[in-house]
Length: 91
Image 1: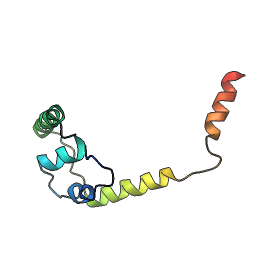
Image 2 (image 1 turned 60 degrees about the horizontal axis):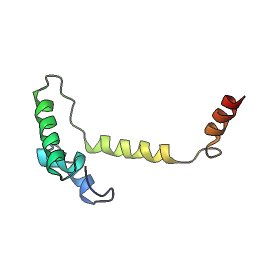
Image 3 (image 1 turned 180 degrees about the vertical axis):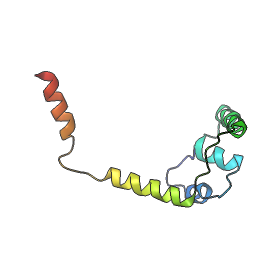
Image 4 (image 1 turned 135 degrees about the horizontal axis):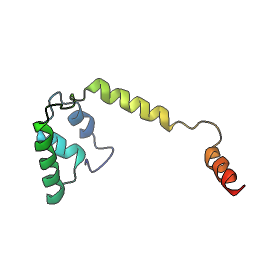
């Protein structure tokens, strides 16, 4: 997993049209030996599948970023759903 969420290499690496093993390990696994070994094992299994997922694209990365930004916008009174749920349980 990329160590810093604001690492400027993340969008660049994620936008590679044909991700390499190193791209995959950088984005989704830590630099530890165990994590990289797990990432390599997953990479091998993933490439053996006959129904492999299509690769991500810069357009899908942008759409996901937009959706996350929209989801994060506050709407209504903060935590009102939690208060309503708590009051229903205490009744």
